[in-house]
View (tube, helix red, strand yellow):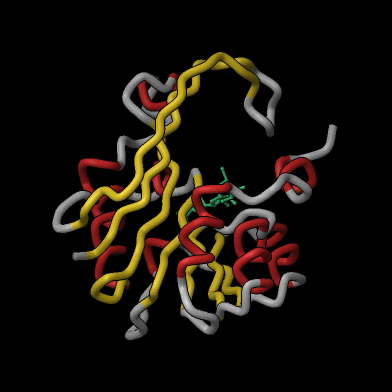
Length: 176
Ligand SMILES: C[S@@+](CC[C@H](N)C(=O)[O-])C[C@H]1O[C@@H](n2cnc3c(N)ncnc32)[C@H](O)[C@@H]1O
């Protein structure tokens, strides 16, 4: 069976991410947290943005390095920077990050910058089973919700094929 990264590398980028990226002027500074196979990093690079992508997994880093993004293999929990990003992308990642590290991410956004994320909602099986954290309430702080969409369905996990209940929430949050 093909693994998660092989299966996801050909999927289209999330539309709500593309919408935000296309509002930004070229050469905007983008941070892709938990970049996976690099689909969102790739489209950001193609739009002329400067992209820093981070993932703890070496296979994810190797794939994303092919997109033209700057890539760093490290845990989000230990990521430090003095840069301020125009947009931070975090698709299906922050629920796996240590909760106190999730709130610090906002410090990497410039005023007016966007946090574009998909995270699990409370009805997701992995949240109920303690395999993933609830994220949104830890982040809202001073951010304004510009877009929200949620969906719930039964379906297989890409990596294992095991069917679970998914509760996925997409957000675009603006920093002031
Ligand atoms: C479900 S995948 C999503 C990948 C990609 N964003 C996507 O939507 O296809 C989660 C990714 O986050 C990475 N990840 C999970 N926890 C992490 C952490 N604490 N630090 C860095 N990367 C992490 C995993 O290695 C994995 O590539």
